[in-house]
Length: 377
Image (cartoon, rainbow, N blue to C red; front, top):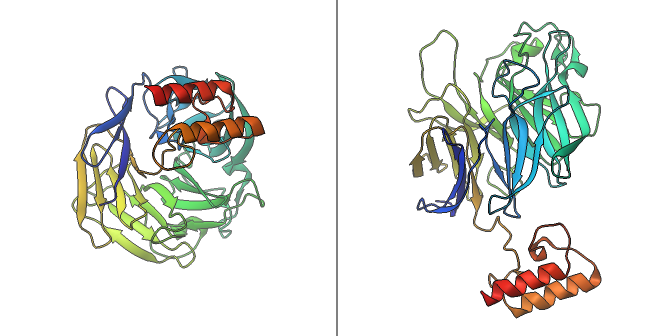
């Protein structure tokens, strides 16, 4: 079992919990806004939470979002943005290492509603800048072009793609389309923006082959250094129209070869949402939307499980993921040595997140005073 913290949001009270393997609550954030997908814990111990805005830009959008809130560890709001642009945010977001946020959204072109990906830069307390946009509508073409979305594809014009997951790794963005039963890889702000890779339903680009995905969710690329690095993993809901409920399947696959390299199914099923993430020890963390979270080994042994109603998708973080504010030398203890190191950074007018005690993105005398108070407590 991977020693870490699990982050999940539970309906109907919309509280986000961080728990350890023994189900002890490490922290919790109370929110008054319905989640669009799942919250994201940041290394600086803050939380980014996508949820549904009160006055939506477009009606009848599945898993509607439009509001993103950034909390500190104690639940104080650092940023609270409500979209007033021409796009309706929905489903997932992905915080980047640059401090921006990738977000799924929908545009309306005279009643035709394809999806877009927005890169959002927080600005002040309530504002944001749109710094990059990728649109399905700008990458449409003929059926036999696998790098384009088939322009005459007979999917719901009001919800043409129904993207439900966005994930970033090595400057490439992974996307999951429920309606097309397919996943995609596109470039993040480089190249021509066309589809780099796609997988799951070759009929979408005029190729004979077996449809593998059915209403899948949560695609992401396994990070470098993890077992299976470079492969992709997702939750294949197996929500097949006209058929009775069966078994959902967690799948790991090689995008280049198209081969499925690992699966897990064990009498669990969810018609919507859900997700899967590879952990550093080779286990896989799975959420079955509705309330089941579990960790399973490569050999198919469930080593940790927790049921909680109203969970869409959850994620597990390592114990070393969170930066311990004030621990300048990383020895797990805050003492006078850390004060000396912070003073050095302040005098050099340089920055390190561990020394930014008040989390204002600046190192100064206030951080030194707060660090002294932490030691004296």
